[in-house]
Image (cartoon, rainbow, N blue to C red; front, side):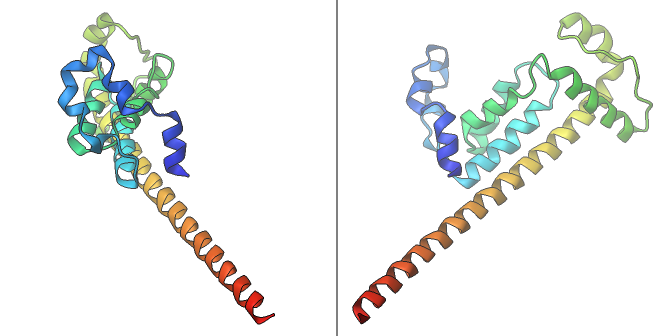
Length: 184
């Protein structure tokens, strides 16, 4: 089931390879390991995607895609998870990361902090906030990534074990029916 669930919503490798703007990445996109849907590749994709989602930087998707290729994780899932942080969710995510970083550094978090998605805001405001923001983002991203990794890994294992038990039960039921039919 997990494999079928992910396969239903992910683009096929052929569709992605045909996108003209990605022609430069051709040799990397042809690596079959970044398209496989198995427990390890999907778990690593959650680790990568959730980590880069929490990082306050432009081009999070490129960083997630590069990491997925290097770590042989599922590329579409890694990139899709980065979309959790979007212009609507970035302010609360980054404020939370800032508060966590401030707490870890022993600083008092600024109450009237507001986020703008502009170069001017980054240039003027980020100078005072960069250390707690990036430390908090790294810690939160790593924590979310590890939680995602282990959650997917455990969920996938449980599903496989459940499938094995169901197959074993069907096999024994079939064998029992055949035995009882032969005894009659």
